[in-house]
Amino acid sequence: MKSKKQYVDLTIVYVLLIMISFIYILPFVWTVSTSFKADSELLDYPPSFFPKSPSPDNYVKAVNRFPFFKYFANSMIITLGNVMGVLISAPLVAYGFSKIKWKAQNAFFILMLSTTMIPGAVTMVPTFLIFKHLNWLDSYLPLIVPTFLGGGAMNVFLIRQFFLSIPNDIIEAAKIDGANDFTIYMKIMLPLSKPVLSIVSLFTFIGSWNNYMGPLIYITSEEKFPLALGMPMFMSRYGTYWNQAMAAATLTLLPTIIFFIFVQKYLIEGIKLSGMKI
Image: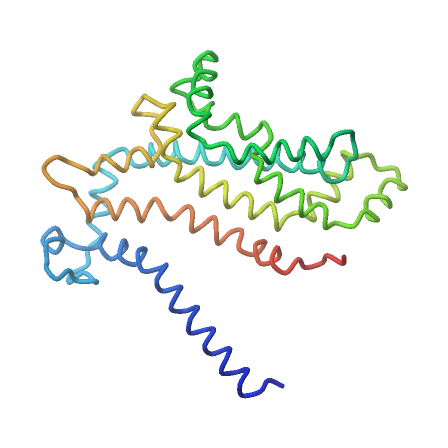
């Protein structure tokens, strides 16, 4: 039974967490609130937090101001391609670094991790030249294909650490029953790895959906723009349609929120590490 002091400590913790959560959620609430404001309310001083007469007209104007649904589809193609590439390649590489023993394994793993210390600005020009010689410019290939070639060092690291927590006795038992490495990977490792794969897929989804620099470098045709490149179209030399921009930003955030809700169950399992008897 908890003492009175423990209840007080828990209450303090919850209050602090609620306050911190409010700080983080405040920009999102302001974005949604602004998206329902009329043009005249944008110039009010002091600004009002909630719209005086909320109206969804800004959402209609926003999707008609630029080809929103076309850019939305382009973003989905790039993002889902990245998520698929990471989920296919990263677990394979992680399995090779965790459950299969081979010469210089640790040396190659350290070499892979060391690539995370190289700034993106250093590799930007050489990578651009490679894709230029492959004639991949102005296409989605430079934004999708690299994820199928390893899945990223940090993703491999996260999945490898999770694989190491799975007892080798399970693998040995499967080998005694006649299972090969690929069968063990498909039938045992992947089903047990749903928590960490959900985390990796969430990070990949957010990073790809919000990626601005990559499309800016490799895509030149306006009809191939993702939403990240389409949003600046709300900027004008005569003024900015902030309420419409916030409406488009709210619509842009929805896929990320929906994807987070979808994988939330597995994220909680990853925290609990349920079912793992180490």
